[in-house]
Amino acid sequence: MGQPGISRTSRRRAIVASSLGTIFEWYDFFLYGALALLLGKLFFPPGNETAAFLSSLATFGAGFVVRPFGAVVFGRLGDLVGRKHTFLLTIVIMGASTALVGLLPTYKQIGIAAPILLVTLRMAQGLALGGEYGGAATYVAEHSPANRRGFDTSWIQTTATLGFLLSLAVILSSRLLLGEQTFASWGWRIPFLVSSLLVAISIYIRLKLKESPAFAELKAENKTSATPLKDAFGNWKNLKVLLTSLLGITAGQGVVWYTGQFYALFFLQNTLKVDAVTAYLLIGAALLIGTPFFVIFGALSDRIGRQRIMLLGMGLGAISFIPLFKALTHFVNPAYPAPYNPALLNAPMVVLILATLMIYVALVYGPIAAFLVELFPTEIRYTSISLPYHLGNGWFGGLLPLIAASLVVKTGNIYAGLYYPIGVCIMSIVVSVIFLRQKRIRH
Image (cartoon, rainbow, N blue to C red; front, side, top):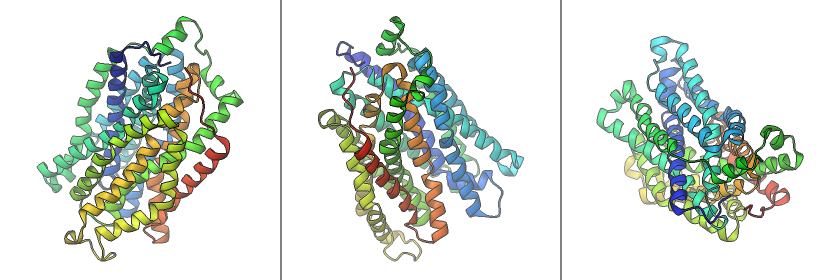
């Protein structure tokens, strides 16, 4: 795994091929998130905007609920037939599901069938996504020398930010070119259809890849697992590591990531009533500042260890989420709850706060791919990585917008939604410190 003899060209190809797929993964994720309010109005029964919005968030969350099942299905396939063919299949399913959303008729056109079709496509995409990240992380790690694994895999982690920026750019340009009324009528379809181009490029590149050298070696020696699910989940030693990595790392990582990137955008638009264009520009500026830190912290993890860097990010989040969001409210609208006044917006301070949240994200997300790869043996790695990652990100993180919005609606406190990520961070820190130890790098 990651033998030093692997050429630099092969490593770069692995990083590029894997990163393009995960850019698309996050591009699609942010499309659903950024357009949740609009999709709620278009695809759910009219008359109750709050119910439609929560229904849209539930649809958004449905894709995350099924991700762990996709992790099991495609993780097993990846450990049986190989990394290359499996994550080629996942990108095809992901791409088709996203593009088809751009062609769906709305509730006004076909009634209740509209939300059913939307949820179906969202779940199909979630299944495929369940196998995408594990394949990408495994493929890159198995091309990387052990002393550079954190650095190499951290490039995959930057794709979340790049996908976010790309989605913001496409949505923003579509809104500006078409105008809000046209965009709300049919222009919202453009970002979903544009995704087809990115998918086509990803498929073309992945078709030219060779199998991971570590898996190819196992296959040549007839040492691959014939029963990866049983070996991964039926073996208590491995299952224990899987569970502790979920509760001690990926759950906390998931909520920090979703709080710092998606929930911050949600808070700006839906709570503080910042217009969409301004909110996108503020988040985009913070992302540009924060993105290099994914690679910085990934590389640093090669030197001082992955776990302590990720725990620092969770600890900072647990301590400062509420103060930071209160500061965000102050610098966006000092007169809150009075209506938002653009003249009162302190943009430099808002970007600074958002960039701080992005750095927390980089702390937990930069080293995580290398950390998970090093926990599990090659023959069951794809299966073992995918499940805790997608439970942590899909269930703990992906459901954050719905849970947080529900807490705010129930309590009337605009900061109540933050109690959820704070609680999960504290849980992960405790579990990690007590039960999970940094594993020795596997060669």
